[in-house]
Image (tube, rainbow, N blue to C red; front, side, top):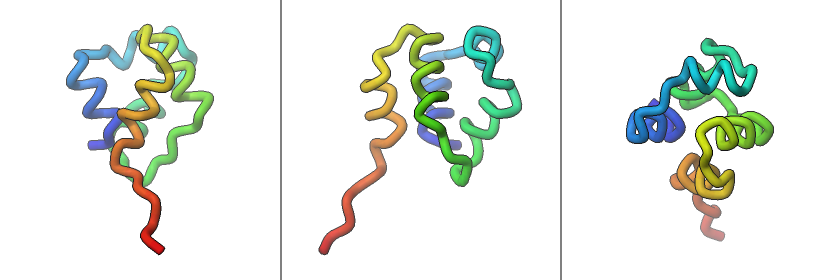
Length: 72
């Protein structure tokens, strides 16, 4: 499960509602929630944040919390 999928589960967010509000297909939301190799587009993140009434920056932080700069 991806960080977005974990966020949806933690907040009990209904993907069907998000799909209906954003126009992002349920299949795409399922891929974004379950497949770590699926890349989330910034436009999708923004639409999702609007649909769930969440600050886009907060959702970005949650979704990207595992990203770190390489040491070098």
